[in-house]
Length: 409
Ligand SMILES: *Cc1c(COP(=O)(O)O)cnc(C)c1O
Image 1: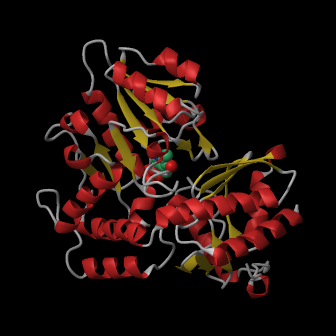
Image 2: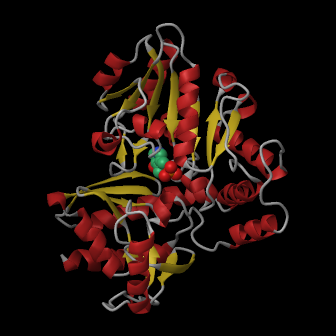
């Protein structure tokens, strides 16, 4: 591998006059649910983004595992332009070819096949709301509980928040939607929780917001066995892990498991806002006409872009790329040989690292100063989720910038 450090444009500027102005306007105009923006970004290409002051960054966060094809990919540009000039939005009184074709693609890549059904929303949280209603429709006399995992993340709307296993996020907005029980992520807790009172078990195969934490070995398979025994649904939240991120279309394939339903969002649209619930087999008959809906869900514009993204992931062999590049990325992190990195984990291009002394945010900030975007979802973990298109050049650049970031601490 050739070294590319000479071409590296580091973001060493301290003055960002344009960003400062926009940051002040952002602080004044937007509701304060987000903090001060890290940078104000203007454009992107491939795995790179530029800020309004001309700073260049290697984007290994990809809008939190969203920009599967990176920025300004010609396939997305073409699909978006063509569909914008054809038909952007109708309503769910009508159907469109892009929506039907995307639904067919999703039931194929999920493995749900001809018995699968797809519901479209516009985000991850909306996919989880649909999944919540699916779980409620699986209720019978005595079977009503929904089980979810502590420290999980399923979104911010009230149903998705009730599923989310983070008390601090829920507390200001109590009461939660009732009927959800959060358990420890251990086989013992799973065995104890799943019985005939459970309508559904909801889980993330790799907890992304918690810092890229894979489930314990055997957990997913046991979850499948127990839910099947007790007629509970197994609902897998693949909003972050899905659509090629882990090197398979879906992370449940890594365990050889078939769920009853899967939620999809983030990476499937490559940046177009779209989410989906895909049901398998008998679960496909649970939601009835009129049970749920969304004005924008699966409109032809978003569906055409997502369809093009899924096709390109397949055509360009990006599952294989996620596997090989992900292994290389893990090697690079280990070779950095830093006492601050206690563990490297994940699957495919969903990579995490454990960080000592609660210094993850310091590392992410130092990386930003070196023109590298990575993320610290909490003080003890780094999350690295680049576009699925990365190759040698991007990995070499990551290596150089990441080492320089560590050297700053
Ligand atoms: C991001 C995420 C969500 C919520 O998706 P939004 O599009 O932000 O509503 C839900 N579940 C998981 C696992 C996620 O990573």
